[in-house]
Length: 405
Figure (cartoon, rainbow, N blue to C red):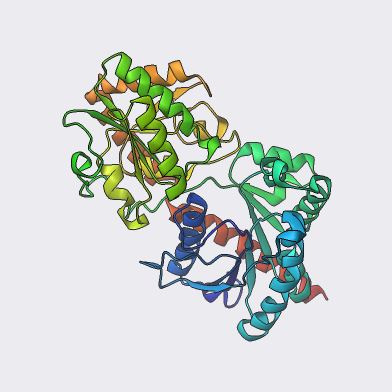
């Protein structure tokens, strides 16, 4: 028997990361929105507290977002801006909690963000902390006080009633910090399999991206951050030209400044025939662009990251080529849903692309296997079922503790 009122639990979702626009086009933005949508789809009333609401409102009106703007004083430095933001966020949150009376807190971990832990303690609420990266390690070069950031990170993790991580590598790292394994759950990214499906009408890449008719299209969608391996695509395009291979790489996404810079480099290197930068597109149009591709690609990724794009590729029934990293291998098997290459091995990446270019039958077979796997294991419904089970357990524990008092 479930706890009384659990079927209509009120969830406060907290995302204090200044760089994640909830209504934005980043993969992390999608992750927040789809988690909230799925919770709401299960009947749970959910509102989002965030430092960055974003501005891509189309198709997102059902999500209630309350923006608590970040501090803008540059003289504080990144570390102190994030730390002092806690006081502003907590002040607003207390007023909202008094009015909304949420039952649980779901928080996406952000640097220096102690607001979730403080609210959970003040109101005696179960709290799930979702951790998507070794943030201090990832952003160390931007931090002025990395040692303090590490201590705060450990404090935040240890105070969480339960921690959701994207990969086994993250779980193992936090286990070494002292987080008990039984308080952690591995939950990779997921995808809306109803939105991303193989029968979506494709855009015309010949018209929109000047792709030559008859060319095999290899696509990447996402931000143009250096760690995504976008620079490698320039090298690969040159190889396609030198070998007279009718293969075109289509890059979808990126902020205008980075897109312009890559287009400039493409023009200077003379590889424009084989490397196209489309730029950012609305999220609701992403399936149409993916539908137009023959092969999908992840040039590089963090070793602990579970790429959202991989599951979107798979849901569209596309074969994927990706680096041989643990989180990727948890989601696809070499030779079944796609092909793997050793990280940073450009020659092997090219070989895998050429193999699929030469075998449309293999592409179709892998694409079907990809769709079957993602529907079976990585639809958002599966993730939210797991989240609800954790909330169920935490609420039970809270009730039992209150009864004992």
